[in-house]
Image (cartoon, rainbow, N blue to C red; front, side, top):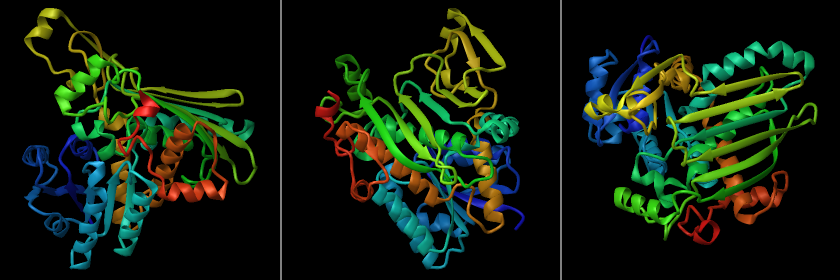
Length: 413
């Protein structure tokens, strides 16, 4: 196969980011887009930048019939239903090779398991899109330190943080539809990044065994009356009734299955970072060496004075989730590559063209969902969970957090 035809189910923020990333990936084109808000604009972008001549389709089935691989980029609460439609389209003759799902794979372990079962039942190859594991800054750093890791011993402590001022869309703020708050939204990134940094070179992504998790969740900014009113006015979400956490932090303990060594992954995520914009920080500490990444360190800075800012304002032209249009601004000229979108898309295209799963399969996505839910459970119960305890593992299979049920008031307020 020369060119892989990709169909998008979803035309919002993440779809636009991936379309921009597609400009840097060979052997693929955008062939179909499900008709939702922004679909026509996304199709126009694709045509203007030589990404294909995508048809804007009225049904999931029609998208599946016009592509080799379909990408699920829709809101979290739609994922299982969408996958059921994809499986039905495949069964009725759509010649799909594979399916992509943007993180998270499911809002619960049960949902993620259903997604895996549907894909495998339809005999589709899978790619779980967790962009931060494809960040060049992380992976080049790990490659540079490979000799040190082999000589001195591997990284034993990894830390990952993601912070910004809050999501764009109303459903992200609603814990019942999103599946929780910032831990569900961004904790999946940070947990996966920690695990990736700790995993020895050449080992599978799920090589390390999670053995314990401790976590806490809190509502620090968006539960204050002034900001609750902002959410109500802007998104129709009432955090006095159905709050979600805007801060989460915790530690996962992993076991190296060959040596028995215990390793630590520390994550922190918030929707209350009102500085330049989205900030990702990661580090890994090994014996005698270290790795550090900060997405706000840029080779490009610009300055905009008050008069010029009043003339034209487009904060996010400089940086995702930026809240400022004036002063000294950090600018990332290639955010799609910086955050790993280019890398994950390139990996998926090459994998599907060779009829195999992406570097991160949906089984891996299921494992990350399980870790996120374990963190919610640890925070809700106020204790460190022993993930080797069979009763804990069984409970996680059907667990749904109080926050995701819209019943988190006692825990957060």
